[in-house]
Image (cartoon, rainbow, N blue to C red; front, side, top):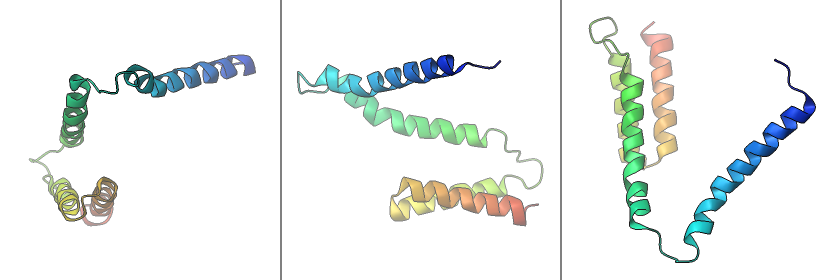
Length: 111
């Protein structure tokens, strides 16, 4: 399916408008009262750890403990992520460091 220039421009325009509306919505909804509803504050506190937990489960769901390498690269990479995060408390450093260690292990050590 080939899109015309007009159809592509219309799609980009609609997506841009929706994205701008979603970014502007909190400012429009909460600017008058000055108070953020408690449910929003609760969700802001609870959802990030919940999402991280779901990502961990998703990443480790296909790891086989019965077959070689028995989940050892994943265990080492998770340990590196936790260690880096406890040491520097920097999410980006933890993710990049853990990913680099995991990729090194599966590409060169546990081939």
